Amino acid sequence: MRLFVTTVAMVLFAGLTSARADTDADIERLVSDMIRQELPRDGIGGAAVAVRIGGRTLFLNFGMAAAGQPMTSDALFNLASLRKVFEAVVIADAINRAELRLSDRVADDVSELARSHDVGHITYGQLATHTSGLLLPQDHPPWPNWGYTLPEFIAALNSWRADKEQAPGEQHIYTHAGYVLL
Image (cartoon, rainbow, N blue to C red; front, side):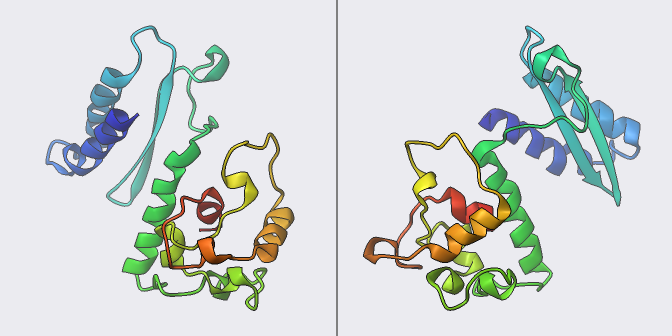
């Protein structure tokens, strides 16, 4: 997976910014050449790629999705923790555009969070660096086989209480819930 992500990053930051990628067809050819090298030779598996360049977005699909269906731009993927990269990029972009600061409290933007509770003191920077202390029982094994609705997730966040091992800003604790909140 790391090789795949690295390959995509190389395509986006190196090949697509070169003079060879002037047209959509050039971009599609460059991405296709790189992605097809990474796909399994047995034909099982695929990739859906979105390229944002020059004010336009291209959606490119390769290989097969689940159940032997051709890959489409609206195929669903379980990205697991890989999604955290995307969330961190969105936050970094908002910081670069001065829309927020790492020291801003998340509760100032998420009105459903109780500002007077522990979750109300967590900052974007703490969430992004896993130093918020936020740790829900579902963040570690045994993994639950159920999910939260949004109201249930907000209620769980509001009822969370930091203890000495979870004091916001004091230590690094890998948290899925923190990135869901982010």
